[in-house]
Image 1 (cartoon, rainbow, N blue to C red):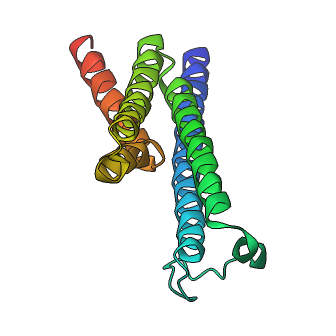
Image 2: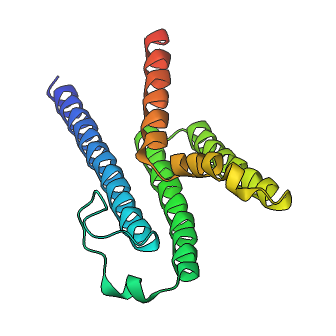
Image 3: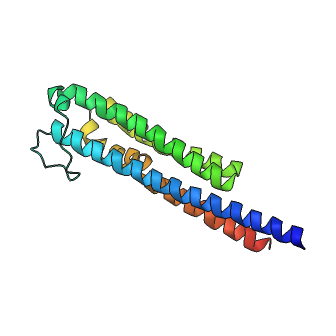
Amino acid sequence: MLKENSYNFWMQAKKTYQQFITGLFLLFIFLIGYLREAMFLVINAVYEKKEFPYNSAYITPPDFLYQWSDTTLLYLKWGLTLFFSLIFTGLTLWLIHYYFKIKKYNQFTILIYGTLILFAAIISIIGIIINSFDNVYTLSRFVIGLVQSPLVSLVLFTLFYFISSQHKTKHA
């Protein structure tokens, strides 16, 4: 009896720890989303020649950004878009793997992110080919914006949590 109670205590402690780490990691993902948004607001304010405090993050742009050409700022934005797309994909994959440890969930996460990135790329490429990038930019930007936000992480985590809960209920 004592051995069973001790085992239950440690299993509950492990689950509580896992939930705590998962909660912290979700907060970290939201923090990265905020930092990404603030960075882009600042870069866009400089690119669009807006006066401070135009950007809603109320962060004074660093002086070196004003020295960069518009082309360099655009390259910076493209590079940061790629960087944050990879960061959010990786963070979400780690979160899903850490909490659920189900290979199908990991594969589905990769599929969702890959599909979103591919869709945004195809839209952009079509716009460039037909010399109409300005007309497709808004849609492409929206799709790649999803990849760079905590929204997909939250939706996937909630979906997998619901599926796992349903599976446990059926087999209990």
